[in-house]
Length: 194
Image (cartoon, rainbow, N blue to C red; front, side):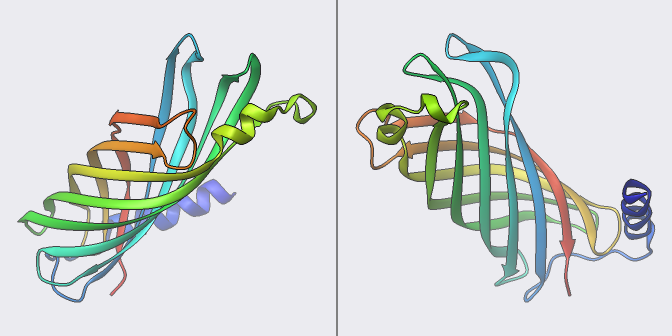
């Protein structure tokens, strides 16, 4: 029943009439996700985790917005000290985004952001937790530089694709400094609130 309700709401939003461009003082809400894939000695093959990124953005000009991104990430199938483990992380990343194409249906942008967060490693079986889990846990920094685009179905509702370069570093542990560096394609939905 919930799926039918959600599909109905999304359909109404998607097929409403009217289109517009981003403009100064627009306020937008975006929810996006990024699957985390693994295939190495330390990870099993396949999707091992996910990053969920809700954000709110405010257009300071017709083409430029300041976005406040919040992220939650979880990664399973890790091995820490020969113990099956996982991690959860939370981060806050202020981002500056500039639309260099700002059409009615299509917006193409570049973005830059830097933020801080926290990461906590734990054993799948809590009785197997060891000091390495605590040593790897701590503060993180995240650098985000990317390009992306929005395709709007109507004046308010659209889909978003971002192809960012991400660099995530553990800033409080000497045991593991570089958590992730690479491309992280992200897809989500955008809604203009005003």
